[in-house]
Length: 634
Image 1 (cartoon, rainbow, N blue to C red):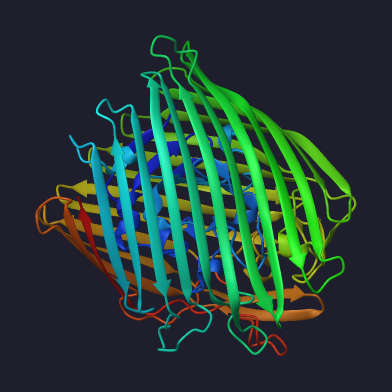
Image 2 (cartoon, rainbow, N blue to C red; image 1 turned 90 degrees about the vertical axis):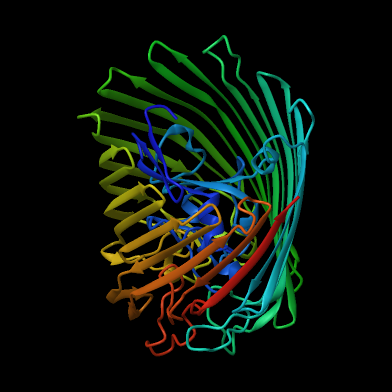
């Protein structure tokens, strides 16, 4: 990444990028420290990203309060473009598979991909080379984890290897978890929170020559259980556990060509196909839907005369389908296509100044379930500058735009929802100012941001059946700060985010804006760990969220009042390597150490204090959870 300053800490990597200022990268050590099992666990150490809900299928991702419908989310380059059910999250992934998660906060560079109105989240899976020990060609990893709160196990087996020349490698992984209903901080069993998940993953990698690399992977994630019909809401007489399944199958091909003697070529090609499905019952009626996507990206980077120019094209084809046995007809479908062209330049003027500028053009079109043909297109621009005041201090400023045109609806809305005949593109604008400081063993970054999403797509009410462009923009403004420190065996990281997000003077809520936006209180996330010896490491991480009080908003003809109480959650962990190497590992983590009873700010807010709204609240989070894992490498 050109014009970026990177400081690698065991717990946090900070990337200072001109157009988006501060991006986070969650690495494998962070994911494994608390033995992450869902989205909330994965993002618990990054204040800018939130996911909540004790039902795994309910968890939606929010970056600086902007939801996953307005983000570009990929797995190894494969876009996760469509939601199947608006009461559930769109992403299902097994943390055991992840190498890292890259996060871009706010609209950024032209290379961010389609529809990155509020930023992007890119999941990166492991390669065989990430698992092989030095000097070995074949290996296996066996791991078992016990979850005390849900009285369940997760077991995994991974085999991997490469040929003697290191030209061809492969891996195969199987992960199975079987978890019962969780218990909250007050000791109550939460119906509909059970989860059984099976992952099958295979990857082949090869170096055709020293300059050419390719990989082919296939991933299948299957979840099932008696899950609440509307998993984002609390269990009630009208929201009971029902037999539910959710699946995602993704195939990805990647090719890279990087000639050693020609800086004008650094070519990459990504081709993928993904299908996400959900099936559930409601009042003995079965509903099943899927979103199927295939797409491709071709890009090249040319370096010349202090410039690094990246340019290319994207294409994506989406299909959303629903089978509703209680409707006539019982099958509904919607199709969409989008293509884009982009260019981004990073220019190193001298030792002090770095500049960047870019543009992309995107063209969206759909044929909806009512056979309407809708389309829109447009350009998005970005520009930024960074000035190195001293070897340690730098300041930066950036402006970026993004566009998202009409896209296929989530499958479960196809039989009852429709699109306005003039449905058009959403656009966003993001302005950031930042400062960063870096010396040996210490880094700090801070800044302010202001963003707007114009013509956001939604309904006038949470239960609206017509998708249309709303008149008022989603406005978000705030500040951030991050720091990391390494002092011999002690590592410390912290991140802080404060964002006020509103529409027409009212704070956004997950209940009203769903996967589009939410309000999360000021959040501080910290991690401290100490490597006592090659055998022992212990750590503590915490998340402190400030309450949001006296929320007043109008929903239809009702004025609703709500509070989002603050909370502080503490996790502790210990890792032990009895043999002093990776051949045998024992890990203990205690998540929610003090058994706190709380409702995550990333969940549906508590509106139960308003007459007639008794069922509108998310499920509380899990109480104390003791997790013990043992892994062996062969």
